[in-house]
Amino acid sequence: MKQIVVFILVLPLIFGCKAQNKQTENTSSFEITKSDAEWKKQLSPLQYQVTRKNGTESPYSGIYWDFHKAGVFTCVCCGLPLFTSSTKFESGTGWPSFWMPVNSKNVEEIQDNSFGMMRTEVNCRRCGAHLGHVFKDGPKPTGLRYCINSASLNFVKK
Image 1: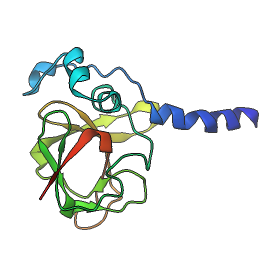
Image 2: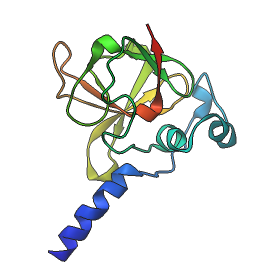
Image 3: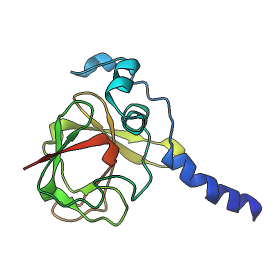
């Protein structure tokens, strides 16, 4: 029983600070590439951890999970348009959720088997920034839920 309690207490730390060492195998395939030092200079520590090291912000902690202004959400690293407010919905997860990207060519989806789970990771196609994950439990018309970290996004008001 004690082991279960310890596991439950440690689990949020694992997912909240998922400090995997993200080293994209072929960074030259991205239109925008920078050194770690350049990314660290451009981004806040949380933005760097999420986008460059595959981190995850804690649920209900990001600025866009309960955000309702009209406009476009762009990649915090390179400015590529990713999602619009018209496709944002309340998923109840504590992260901003969208049922479709602005353009499917702006995101890449990669199988993610970390932590013993089978998920689909979503990254920015221009710079390789980790954005979040996509799940098949979203609303119509797509049935998808792009669960995205606020730390990976900027908002451009319409």
